Each structure stands twice: as C-alpha cells, then as structure tokens.
View (tube, helix red, strand yellow):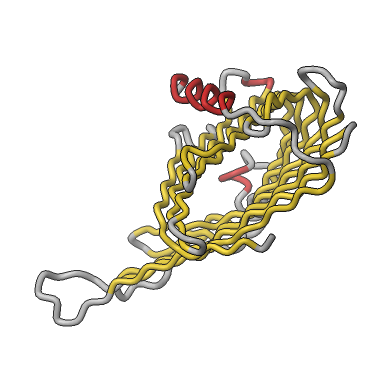
Length: 270
C-alpha cells in the first residue's frame, strides 16, 4: 500500500499546471448505470436479474487571491434484484464537504473544514431468519470539523492535516456505531488527500484518502479510501471502476472493501 501511495503522489506531481483562474469554478455531473439479465427456457440455467445505480458529483470552488473556498457533494444510490427475491440496496451514500483555505503565500496554508456523511434509506443485514435493519438516514451520521495546515503543489494534488473533532450520531443503533452513545464525540488528528489526474485523453482518476486518529488510541487509525477510474467511451457513455477501502475498529476489526464496475450514461450539467 505504501508503494501504491508513493506512486500516486509521484504521478500527480508530474502533472503540475499553472494556477486556475479566479472566481467560481463549477462542476456537476451525473451517471446512471443499468444492467438486466432475463431467461426464458434457458437450458443451461440462470436467474433473472437487474441492477441500477445513480451517481451525482458536484464541486463548487471560489478561487480568490487571498483564499480558496471549495465545496463538494457526492450522492450515490443503487439497487439490485436476483430471481424472485426482493430488491436489495447495493450502494447508498450522501457526502458533503466544505474547505476554506487562507493563502499566506507559503508552501503550506491554514484551513478550516467541515464534512458530513450519511445515507438515504434503511440498510439491512440478511440472515437465515430474514432481513434485519441495521442503519437508517442519519443513523449513523458522521461529522468532522478540522483546523490545520494544507499543501497544494498543483491542481492535481491537495493534502491537509489538522486537529479535528469527529461526531458519530445514532438513534436506534448506538451499540453498533456509537459504542453505546447516541452522540459520540472524538478528538484527534485528521488527514485528507485529494488526487485528480488523467492517464490518457479519455481516462481519468480521482481519489480521496481520509485518515482519522483518536488521540486516546493513536495506533488505531480510521481509514476511508475512495478511488474512481472513469473511461469516456463517447460523449454520453462511460465505464466507471470504483474501489472503496474502509476501516473503523469501532465497527469491525477487519477492513471493509467495495468494488463497482459499471457502464452507463453520463450527463454533465455544467
């Protein structure tokens, strides 16, 4: 993993560009992926299945001489169904982030940031006895406020480190996510690195690595690493490969992994 991180940082530095223009820079794009399989008297066997996923990503940045104010939103939701079983949620995420950076004209600049993560609908754990509800909207919800210093050598890589407060909000599932507390507050150190660059004319990579360490247990680091590779086949058709690695010892002692490979329609709003 260290070698992979070093490679990503090195490649990003090679793609350095001049500073962007001042003023508001706006980006918003959405893509819808859908797959279906249907059988009728198919002797080799198989089950009817369908799956769909909607992704919306937006970024609104105000770039000025003395400050940068960056705001991002990420929405992902999808469902699958196999055979006669009911549809099941495959992905569900609402993520908001706002970062204000004051420019001192140095290699590092002070910043303050806020981020929040939750989901739209109920999540279930499927057992032999049936479906058991284990999460809902704002149950859990994660919020982080950070004050520190940031470093951005170019438009492709931005990293920041600071002192942070992290709140875990729960209602019914405090034992599962909040260590028995409906409002759990942790303080510690938070690091966030954003990567964005192109491998080729129509292939791009974006990544976000978030690390949080509670000062009471500095050797236990929460990790949220989100990677997305997009290949633009045509104006409206793209192939997306998304890999997420998540680790939070309070939820599970093992790392969590999610992979999604999808082909679908993409529309750029502005």
